[in-house]
Length: 602
Image 1 (tube, one colour):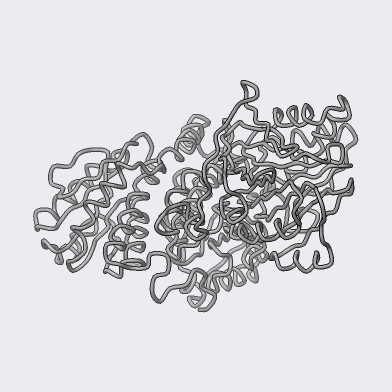
Image 2: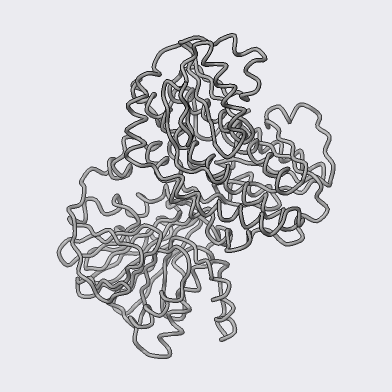
């Protein structure tokens, strides 16, 4: 998740870029940079950290007259957050910014290096500018060179390129990552979302995947596989706060809907046709590792619990999961053949960070799964895998949980490959299921409307039980946590088979049971558990692909071929249910009482 801005025209460009990047800083704040060409002169500035550092660097610079300009705020994927890895990336006479991941960048980089190109950064983006210059040096046609460059790229990208050989032109391309074009007369703007250009542009065109082209003399030339095409602009929304939420009522709602897209970014370059790859991991990293211990808090703890089933089932390696705040004080036994994994959305969770330091003092190898590069936990760990969820503004985590769980699933298959603990056919089954996951995360209007309608039943009563078995038990814990965080109603997650060992004493018509009933895993077992609750008059909301006659409310899911695909689809239902109940109760969904997004105290 990075942010892109661009502008071609006569206005002062530095402030347009910096103001635009300020609106996009939520998409990444590891580093930022701008590049401007005016009067045949190219100026560029980069700074690591928050955008204020770039403002300070450019305070003595002002752009005047006609020119082309691009800017970028970075959320690191390939390469650490350094000035060399910051965008825009430069060639001999061109600059590029890019959001997304070029899946075949290593292959392209090797080809370019064989041609004598020297790379300055560790990023995938730099391949774009060197490809462009390679093709331009051959044919001396800037647009043809850009077109050839785009044709070589695999993966997701939104990119802008400017060059001294076409100093009145911005080249653009979009595939899988968001980008739009704004218009105000002859002035043309680019951005990753609406907010940077509100108050500047009057009309907007949202680029479609596979579209590319260039802007020159105030005119946009747009192309796709069929050649040049016409397009129709729309009026630009004027409310900046509403634009940030893309029309959703709350950031949490927006982030639930975003999960399908960001899951693709999480998997990009990692889920290959027949294997899992992590550029972050050396092949020997798991040598000598005979056990895994995971430490986390809250939602991250639930993703860890889910992964314990996967590590033992697929990787055939013992996995223990600890609540970080408890782990610190139990005088744990730590042996050097144990991989210590920490999970944190922010990378600043105090209890998790201190647990990591304990493990490092004991000589354990460490791996962190995090959403924020250069955070304390990432810096402290031997290796870090970023979830690529993008900024999550809602305090109650949604897409961070989903992407953490996906990374752990991928990691369990990666270790299985390394250990040859399951067959190639079984690995292929897992990969095929991963590739179906983004579809399972799509929120349809029909689903959301149904959950909105039935949520009115669940505003009163003496509590909720979320119940599930196997990987759906941690999901039950997470569903209950989501509900209590934002609705302030009591909710508890429970293993379905444990209900008769005490909790069923609470069952009556005012006890709401949210039953997670996947058809691909232990369906008959959990069906029996739900029947026991129904016989005690509990109100049942069943979430399953299979109709359940005893359910007072039934939410039918679509996917039933693989437990993890069902896991993610049912996860979305529990998130939407918590959202709609909370909204009906009149709560501030994004800022629930007593909570904070990053817990930096014990």
